Image 1 (cartoon, rainbow, N blue to C red):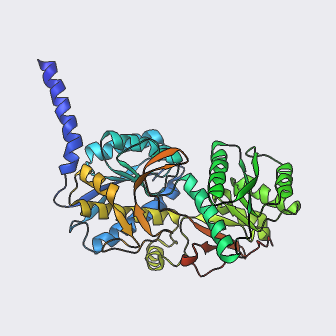
Image 2 (tube, rainbow, N blue to C red):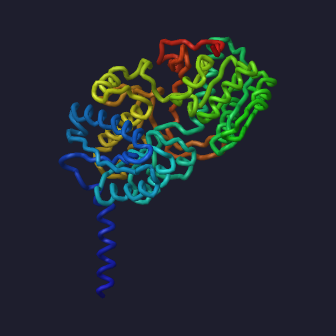
Image 3 (cartoon, rainbow, N blue to C red):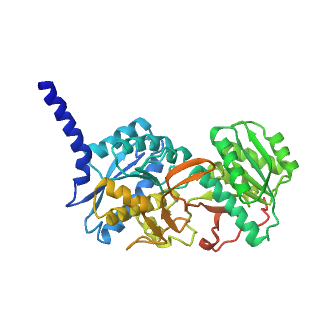
Length: 414
């Protein structure tokens, strides 16, 4: 009998921990969970994400809070470790009783945190994790605001296609792809081919190399002999430096060279390759020279002493998204917030809030099939902006509506 009472007590406690969160805090401060690497090797990134969240909270509270209630963040520190992230997610849900969460940064951490959120039926929005697999598991409580890896590659191809058709009359016809032979590189090859073919381009060369190779001469010669109009690349920093230097040595200078950021936006890239980097384009989530977000960035810079970047902008956007969802739901009930997120549509600006700073004009979530793979609660509207290196600096050149700068064509490499 005693054992039965103990078991029943534990069962009822579990129900209280899960369901009680949806009832907790209906009065007083409204608490949201945020889970990021605030310590450990990637803490500088986590702290910059935190700045974007802190600014959003300040702006929301200055405007009256969430349905009149002060917004407070309950922080979780993943330390960049999936195991720690899992335990922190459980703490936020069961002990802190947050009705919804924003997080995490690394896809490996987000993968396990989303498992916890799904188990406890707690809405989780990720603002920056890009691994394709995250939205392929059919989770009902997980929502991806940020684009996927395949989405980054889509933006690269969309930019090249838009410039080709709007500025060059569609004269560019062929594409070549170069990446390392890691899982990420193979994904780059797969989705670059997919989007290029979707937009009517002929993929005439596919080159994979061993990550960290000391020599890329044969690979560059294969690309040069193919003579592509557009080159798509994804390389980590050491390989990116070697690739560009070898291209110039072998007189391979594609008119449009578009990259998936990675090594090409690393702070050490331009100093190591010099002027030959001029003309290379890369994906970015947001840049200070974009037309959007100047006032918000000004306040961010005044408070923190640095410019916003893609991470802080996405985090800022994620908090406003959750604020809007809670107000539309009219409740902190987890299922009502989930249902609201599933059907939410935000265009151009948040209700009683700021304009969207990101490179796209709409936030919504849908279940869709892409190349035979089903994605659940994916934001189909996302695109990445494109920056070109001009005079040794990154300058936003696309979307055309968000910049006053023009692409230098053909890429000068000098």
